[in-house]
Length: 176
Image (tube, rainbow, N blue to C red; front, top):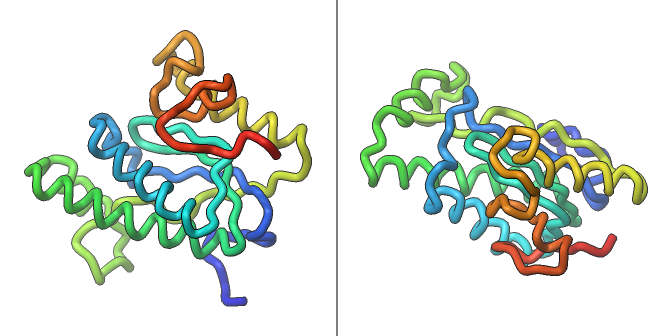
C-alpha cells in the first residue's frame, strides 16, 4: 500500500475526519455549495463509502466514514469537491473568496491557481460503540454549541435527523 497523506492506518474501519476550508474561509453559506459536498458523498456511497454521521458548517465539516480504501476515497472527495467549488465560485464571480483561496494557497501547490481545502483531515480511528457514540454526538452537537440552533435536528446540513428516525438530506448508516 502506498503512503497515505491522511495517516489512516486501518482504512477499512470507521474514522472520524474533519475537512476544513483553507484559512477557515466561510464558503458553505449557500445551499448550492453544500449540495456539491452532499452530491459527492452520495456518489462515493454508491462506490462503497459508508457515511455514519456528518455535519457541514460554514467553513468545515465533520464526518464518520468507512470504506475499503478510505484514504483514497477522502482524496477523491477533496479533489472533486475542490474543483467543483472553484468552478462554482468562478461562474458566480465570487471574487473575494477566490482571491483568498489564491492568497493563502501553499507555495508548493504551484500546479494550480487556488487551494480549496487545508491539507490533512485529522483522522481518528473509531474503536467501539462508545467512541462511535461520542463522535456522532460531537458531530450533531457542533451547530448547537456554536449557537446556530437550539436542537441538533434543526441543523439542516447534518445527520442528526436520521438518528431520530426522520429523513435528512443524505442517507446515512445509523447501525454500527
